[in-house]
Length: 64
Image: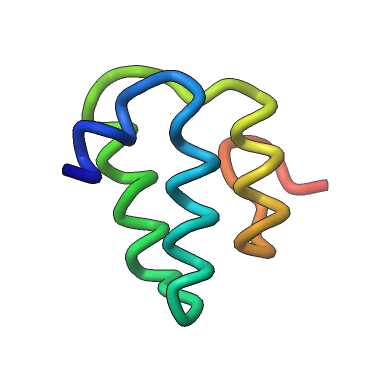
């Protein structure tokens, strides 16, 4: 279950990579992020930076 996996520390970036590799499933990748937020487990700064780079958008902070 991707929702349960997204809540495990260290799994978020790998799951987002897998979703994007699956024909650039950006909506699926964003869903994983939403599920992670819903678990109440905050993403680490490293995870946020990696997801920012993978999606090409800035998440979780002020615009640079």
